[in-house]
Length: 94
Image (cartoon, rainbow, N blue to C red):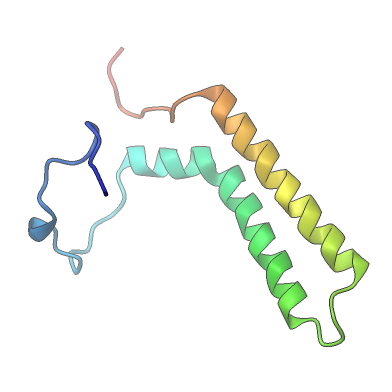
């Protein structure tokens, strides 16, 4: 069962136009920038997995090591984000 938390948008799904072109807000860009180290680490995992899948003669020990290191990097980045708390806000008055 899917439930909405209290932070969910009050805008009904039917009223959102997926073809509407808009630029990301400063807060959205700040959130992406804040989470970028984790996103980059997750992309490294995907790259390593692709190399393992595409290995013509089977993955080598180096391929597996690359995947392990990428996964550990994801864990480190996720832990670092968890320690820092919430995403910084942009444009709020003090």
